[in-house]
Image (cartoon, rainbow, N blue to C red; front, side):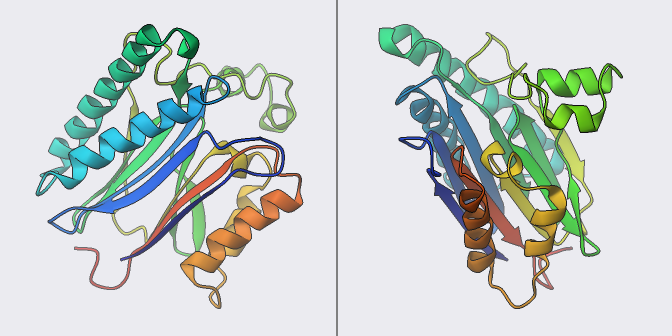
Length: 248
């Protein structure tokens, strides 16, 4: 498997509240994580780093995540532990109350591919030369779309499109959405909303399918495109491409 991840502050924000990583354990299983922190100066950065550090430590210190069911339970348990850590940090640090973070994660093995999501960071796969959105955003606007109150086109420019309905650190319990994805998907792509707010899925897909670019070049090109359009938010990407022999 080939992997690359990168985060960029963008053109407007004074600091980066995103955290991102890709890790491999002893059984050649991969974990990809993107977390987009919130809560103001330094607070969001703390929340997102708690999420990434916790998942990373637990993943690399275990020989294997086990079966698909084991991996689902692992994601659920650890994300709930992260939520408690963030809540405790907010209670213990007066100036950090209200901190939180989104998290989108994927576990990639030869036998299965699963995603977990809380918030509005996004998880995609590429299969048959087509980009597919796996995760659904936990936003007010998405709830309105699902209820039929507004159209998807109206949602793109809705004044409350950034209002989150779910995030780590926002409630005592925070269960992630889990997605069991077709294991024949050849690419896994996670990103914060700093990317998807400025580039359409068609624009992202076009770059990912450029055969003359390396993984690194594709990620850098996407971030540069966002910054050329204003870079209004932090931008983070975790990207994995499976090669022949990586899929059972």
